[in-house]
Amino acid sequence: MANLVKLKDLELLKNIPNIGTGIHLNIIDGAPLSNPSKIPNLTQANGTFLGAKGLIKNAILGKITFDEVFLETKAQLEFLVRNGIKITHADSHQHAHHYPVLGRMIQRALIKLGIKKSETPNHLLQILHSGLFFCNLLLFSTL
Image 1 (cartoon, rainbow, N blue to C red):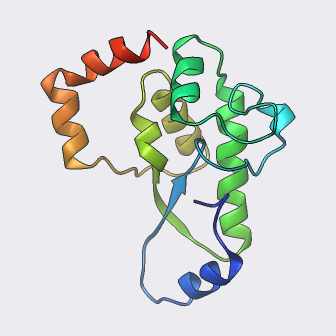
Image 2 (cartoon, rainbow, N blue to C red):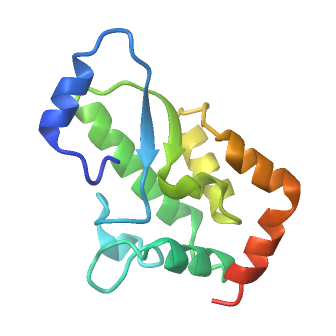
Image 3 (cartoon, helix red, strand yellow):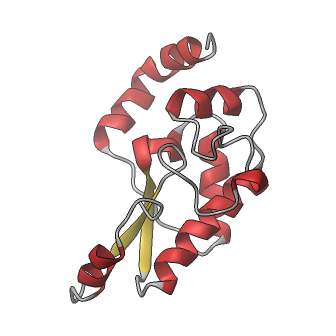
């Protein structure tokens, strides 16, 4: 998670030969790398991210814009690249790239930034195919 990583850890990572490194996009915990005032529907008044519930609520209510998602995704990607990390793929904290509404924006942002591979864990695929996804959507819509 680019917004929470220590620079010494990036130094260790970039010295590992022949490794594919993914961005673990985080728009749920901690502080953003972009200006919080530019991404108001992703952040709280104190400048930190909303957390999963707040993020999903704002996504379902249509408050989050593609520009906000793109700006923070770009900031995290640029931070890693600036620190010598070559990004080969992506996933996201708490699988946000698979959330209703928001997931599509994250995927578009990643593609626009040149990241065309993202990971989907098997257990998430099982949930999506089982219909439980729609039950969760109904639960979140009552927030």
